[in-house]
Length: 144
Length: 144
Length: 144
Image (cartoon, rainbow over all chains, first blue to last red; front, side, top):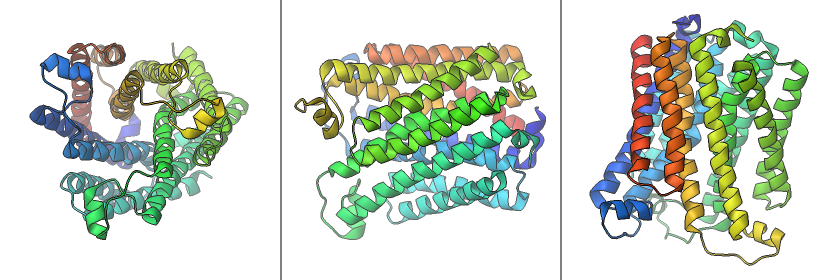
């Protein structure tokens, strides 16, 4: 293992990020399962392949796609922010709170989004965003 | 601080990227503010929560969402490109031009997109894309 | 060059990722070329700039945009997964198979998507996803 990953904050960051990618993949898989179950696809060639008639847009599939896009807007930028933050050698106590808090808030965000639970979804979004911004500002201060 | 971040090109890259994430977050926040001000939301559960009737799509909100998606398509791939470029130990002079140029071009791109300024938006897009491709090719040549 | 990039698995990862970014840029450029050729744009200000009347949505342009979004959902998370995997000092033989396999599957995915080839597109998607998940789980086991 590269010596980078023996750094405990970086190691915790790596575990956090990989679990978040699994979570994103799960949202994508959920969308595919809904598409198959309801026979609603994105392209004419998908309908041709299956030999079925094209259907109207399905609200639950669109909701799962929005949850996925929200992940792209949040979890992907977090990769760079969390990696740089971990490289500033933060206190392990703070890193644990931020990374594990971010992980839990984003898992809950997906669940609340798909189950149409409001204002829970917005609260989970704001918690995760706040934790990312704290890490971002702390890192910027260290680097500047 | 990890020795990686004492490398001046990497440090400049880190600062550049973190400011770009702040910029992306600002575009997302602008979308949310527009949604609240105009009472136009993405999901039925948002309307239910607020107890207001669903409205038609708003053109300015859709424009802000396109600006955000354009960031996903450009700034997120830049993270990997810029990080690898900085790790090739480039001349600090070149790194400054590319990173600061990229940062400014992408900030202007968002402003021009939201203010509907064309061809300014397209010029800012092309400048940022060109700088990223220069870094990408320079890095590929060093690695290959 | 930073000593990180002298690690052969990291170097191969860097080359793989940079080629994938070029591929993503190519899908974006293809969308722009289609827009110009067919005179179909995303915003009113684009039509004003060109002095042409707004047109209805074009199915091929929407397909290229979906291929691009699929890249965001897959290639961008791969950056973090592949980087962390390479940092665990994997066997170079395994790293070669996973990285080169992923690269080829994602290039084919774009070609199959744009040429409307099914089930080829789905097969390429599943192959790339499987390779990423193998790297992800292998890395998680090393880190945990």
